[in-house]
Amino acid sequence: MDLLNDPDLLDQLGPLLSAEAAAEAPAAGVEAADLEQAVWVRLLESGPAPAEPVRWLRRAVRAEARVARRRARREVPYGRRTHLVDGAAEPEDALLDGEERKVIRSAVARLPGRCPELMGALLSPRDLTYREIAGELGISQGSLGPVRSRCLGCLRRMLAAEVAAPGLRGKER
Image 1 (cartoon, rainbow, N blue to C red):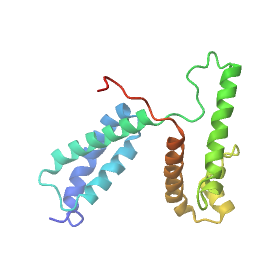
Image 2 (image 1 turned 90 degrees about the vertical axis):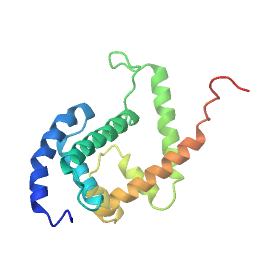
Image 3 (image 1 turned 135 degrees about the vertical axis):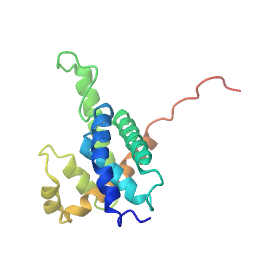
Image 4 (image 1 turned 30 degrees about the vertical axis):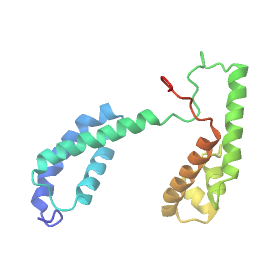
């Protein structure tokens, strides 16, 4: 059975998906609409309609919520220091922050292609929108996301290579 040719199935799943996403979204730290969209994409990518669509839908919502929770745990808010007391920065914090910024800017400058320009615009204190960045760089707004993703992946690999590997844990033989 083709999913796109079965509007009854889509109509049946819509309200259930909205309810499931609304229930799971707060615990996952995402908006219900984002969770719904991820599940619709998963459903469309799955090919033929699942044999038990309601069970599949519930499992898919929970799986997408787990993915969102993992992502939230991995991502660190930009520009926050956990050891600041009453918002007053210690001289040590200022030095560490400056060093961190210096390392990131240095790595950004070594990125290939248009990445240094794009990452420089994204790191700009002017807080530019995608439309403004696209206009400045002469790139279509639709291609900014994929280019940004590739640049960030490259930057992650560069920074990971510069950080010392963790030591062995446990007993060594």
